Length: 403
Image 1 (spheres, rainbow, N blue to C red):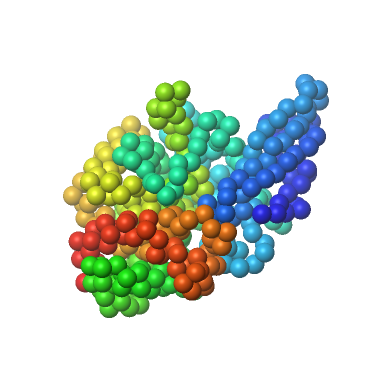
Image 2: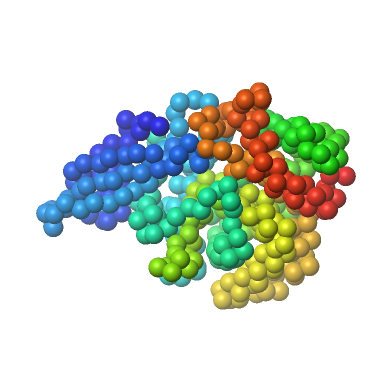
């Protein structure tokens, strides 16, 4: 991937001067390279940049590593998606306005994300972030997914974000006005993607012995499947709503470990799909896209219980009246009611998560390249995807959503 020419010395000087609050910083040199391989990121271009800089105070050269997130300007589905879903505007809003309030509510020793050094949406989209790998954070292999311990840590952090956002919304509802739509915004581009996803699942089911019935059921729903998925993510009048991360798949969570490889911390990355709606949205999406098969088999209810307990604990700590929080029964009813959102994630995002690291891995190709050797066919017919869907299809069917 080629670094855009406008990712320049001037941009990095602005970023470091702003972040360190030091106007005397000067950039000596910088080197950028791809931050992730092809197939590990789908909505923006990511670069890891090593910057050498100096300040008039020290006179010494300092080095810092940052992640540079750029809007793709080469055309195609990636650029269209970023534009139609306002991905960069939303993430810039998260770092500039929303997170400062979230941390003020939680307490500044809580950390949910990387630090942001700089954002700009005009004339080009660019976000410069702290490189979490320099703090010892790492991504886990997306093909494998998370075990129960990592799932618990993820929903603990999820509950912190969700709880703080409840308080934030009550203090200032305008802080969520940019978060009305998430990944599945109701527009032509997303509808085409979801429609292709459902059809690809139907086609795959016809090739999986014993799973034909799920293909028949999904086929019988026709366009109603689209509507049910979009409907499942909407806010309800009088409902309990939180700020959902909106895109909790494996690569958007990073973990750190001690010298004994014991899990110590976690950070969320990528806040382009944030949506203010039911917490069931993050839970369904996370379970569909990010958990190990064994977790899907044995531990979904345990994860939901752990999340709910953590949500109550965080709200209580923040002195929010728990009488205004759904009961466990109401929470589960809402989760069940929104099960089609999980199926939509399994039909559209999970194939990308389980696909191999192919050079043709892209949104364009999963939508357009459905030939037997194409990326789209591979994504829906590889063994990893099939094994997960063998558990997820009966799971979603158990809610009665395919009838």
